[in-house]
Length: 115
Image (cartoon, rainbow, N blue to C red):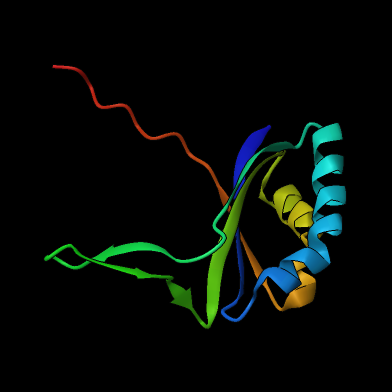
């Protein structure tokens, strides 16, 4: 089994009401994934964060949008391959709310040789 990360994005105006509307669906999905030994971990990004950018390393409280979508969470799952991970991601409730899930295989960081 390989590990994959699901990057969950929702429309910029997505808020607590939308999150609450699918909370029970998320619980059902993650409970099933846990029972099937698919779920590894998840992290929620509920609002704005500190965004550092440019050579000057400027900092501002903001959120990064891509095509009017913002990242709200990541989920790490186990799957046999990318196709299986994509199939699992199709059960993410945010898809019903105009959201998007990006699926990427997690590759370990190469270890630098010690001098």
